[in-house]
Image (cartoon, rainbow, N blue to C red; front, side):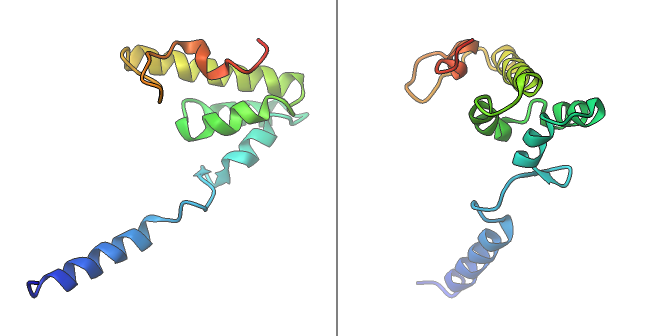
Length: 117
């Protein structure tokens, strides 16, 4: 083993530690994705609109948005669905050959396949 290997290992470990932990919630403009999603339920239009803008095209928010569809009020549900659809349309335009994990080309509606449209 060369003399620089322990240094490289130490630097790599330090980089991993400083990168952030996987169990920490993703933050967008100071709030967690879950907080923005809950704000889609707000009685105040300005708060719902701010949440929609903060969550727009945020790939890390898509799984939580999809799960939240079942518990959001009708306005929050409509906004979350629109965010998911807009993201999928953007992704499909930008990456036309996008394939899902099964290896088949994914259409825009596949993400919501379990949701009753």
